[in-house]
Length: 439
Image (cartoon, rainbow, N blue to C red; front, side, top):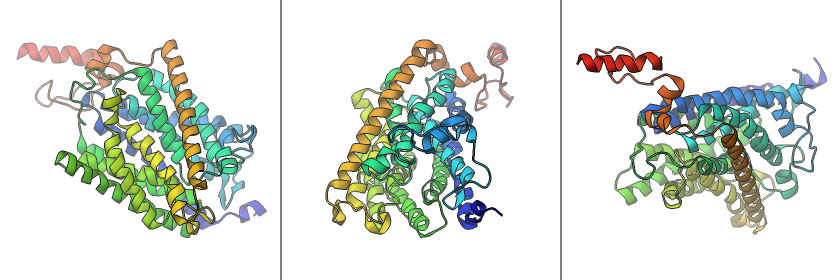
């Protein structure tokens, strides 16, 4: 056994293996969550946008993304080097802390995957699938990878120069995906019938199932970021559960007072909002702080999702209202609620730390949000000019499932007698017309 291999902790490694699988499961969970929220005519397209992100981001990450994000700093805290491009030099005996480096790299890959998939919710029902396939790897390299290096990489300016705290991804995951989603909303424009037609979720049980899988995976997302089977992971695990619960309750409370009806969609959205907000702060705040952060996110995000109607940006599935706003809440409140018991040093305003940490958190939020928005807007505009980013009006009207993928998620009895709907668009439409003529 080599000296490097001897430093691997089997307990930490086992936990991180499980956590990696949990975080990867979040992307199929997100696919169900988003898929249930869109209309029935585009549900398969929504599912596929998440699933294809797994493949696209994985290829980019292994080629150079991991090295640029977590390699030795090569540009004053802005980006890593290419010494590990193609995973060069990372054999089975390479160690990161107490776990194999290859496992650490895979764990971080799952974060990049779900962040890209999150952006798709902002442009649901109207984005060209081919344009999305081009967008994802370019966006991952130009937006996610640099912000991940800033926040977690060796020499990253947010972590080591500014001193802002982010335990599990408020900046590179939540704020980045939310700001990028807003940018793409503006590039593509609103859906046909926005603010006029009802665009209700077509399958609420699917939404709740997806939210449940997200919540389950979030324990790996947050507690796995402790990179060990230890007391910090246990505290983060409990904080994650607590914030999800108060987020759910806060959203339902607002719905009951405002609308007179607590809803299943509200419960699912509130839980996700609480989980989003606790992501950056789960390793910095006490249990009481986690309860407060989750509740604040549930209440504020329940109002924020309606901003799109006031400001005329069509954020289809509330990526801005939940992920951007929730990420800002959780990242900013570190400067108020952080406790030395969790951070090992830095403290928030309410624990005697003054305004210093709050100011650092605010600077990080503004810079990351602005960078993600501007770069994503530029990428979107270039793709739109070169190949078109938005589906045609006919495709959007008929639904992307049939017109783009030649599939239908459900058999609505169009063909009669329970006959299955064919996956071929060319044959399914004439067949349906023939049945109507016979009738």
